[in-house]
Image 1: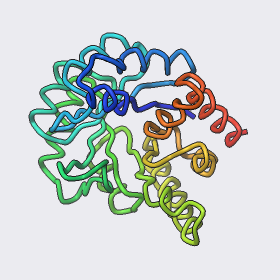
Image 2: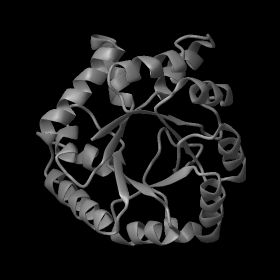
Image 3: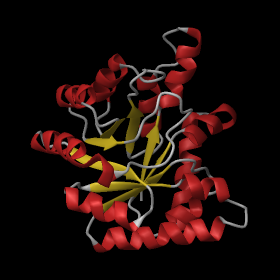
Image 4: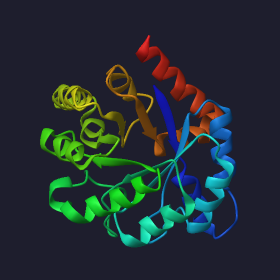
Length: 240
């Protein structure tokens, strides 16, 4: 299972004081050295954490998979066209949200999403869609011709330890099985921690997890490298 680390909140800490540190690029390289398979960064419309210069610097420095999350807009596609990340993950975005809430409505976005996807694929950039674990959304993503989907695990993370946990776990398993039957590469992410990731990692259909906030939080007590190693260990145990 591939482990991608989202380094957005390194930039959040930097921006809180208007300094040049901590450096997202340095953090990304530490994560890779500790065993991360890829780096994810979300360039938001309001640039609340990752900024344009960060994206360019990350593309230059990251020699493994660089996944750039973004809204499906002309502005963002133009940036991806210039920077050439390995993967672009289209995500829903609202200015007032604290973090990404829910998945894309692939069917509702229609031609706009199709146009953005085709532009990137023409430049040999893989496209992934961040969607809810729902059959209709998975089918729509497959029909669009994307190479990958990322299942939103937020509801599972919120239910972890509660009565609804098993229901959300089953929902993800059903979605993963269906996505695999369509031949899609499959990632999962949002709200995943060392405590709740094991059940997700145990789903053999899932090829990759994207984890950010929990790793940066763990780094406060165990160092960034230690947090990546600890997360990798949990994934390996789940797969064994």
